[in-house]
Image (cartoon, rainbow, N blue to C red):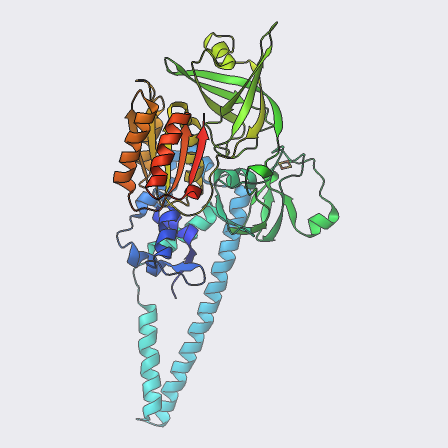
Length: 491
Ligand code: FES
């Protein structure tokens, strides 16, 4: 009987983006059976599937090799307790299968014996002869050693190392790897989870376990009522998946309107020179008071200079919501921007307290399964980077394309990141454009988009100055792109 896996698991096994498989389901190349796909079908579709590229085989080899020792085990394996629980469940399953197999085998042998006895009493009886031959041939086939389907082996292995969580009612899925708790794993997968403190005090990450087992990862102060406990409620920030499969019932944010305004006192962790006129500002929140936000959103940064008025400026966040403790911002030299002026003058230093108020903004991923196209001008790369990181975590889009216009010669201050994405991911492409005039640059990008993406139904995310947005927006509209598929952030 062929082995069935979910699309999510199939993507992990083959090392392809889930969006690519979903696209194949939509165009009929990949046929699902009740939402599942058989490993035989996968191997027919991907006959050259090289498991090494999926990382799975590599992990197995690494685990076997003691030289990798502690680092690999800590990164990939869950805690000993969780590992023991998953292995125990898998051993139970195996024991069940073995018991059933032994009983079937005994049954077949009894039938074969019966057929032979009948043949001895009625030599040449056609029915018994046919039955005896059928059983003997069937047994020979069943006991023959076929080559192992590696996808099945890897799926079993993956079940022990990585738990699969399904979310109801959205149907989203995410993996829990290593020692991550459910909240961390869900955020890393790009889900818009509801949470607050992240340390077991507020109760906002409460979810109901529908099926599967969880294990506590840390102490928590929040008290669940007896009714909640009996209904299976747990805190995501203090539990992980103990079983290989887990189904949770929880509500996810549907958009910016579901994210509460927060006021947090952060500290400057680092200031990095990216280019003569660009700095990377790294703010760190307290561990117990992190910023919940959606990729692409902005916050108001505030700083008090002794003896002077407070400075307040809105900046787009350039990091992923999955790391809510470390917030990144690209700050460009700008005399009209009080915060940037203080930063470039050296008044804001590592250790300085900076307040964060927000998040604000509607420039967030809309969801859906279309290819995503991002166009950024100068600092517009910040929110676009955040969106790209979330899109990569979600792994839903068939492809991602980035066009980045710099109006200064040193404007592609994070091009290494683009190169890294492109080298690591088949479905990511990027193009860097340098042009002092933002409108002209936008026009050049529009030409490049037409050449690369003509006829493809995409969602477009544009961030940059008004001239850049206007030119690109008009061009996309005149090319027939629906207004609902263009999302903009004017900086
Ligand atoms: S986020 Fe506050 S208890 Fe989990």
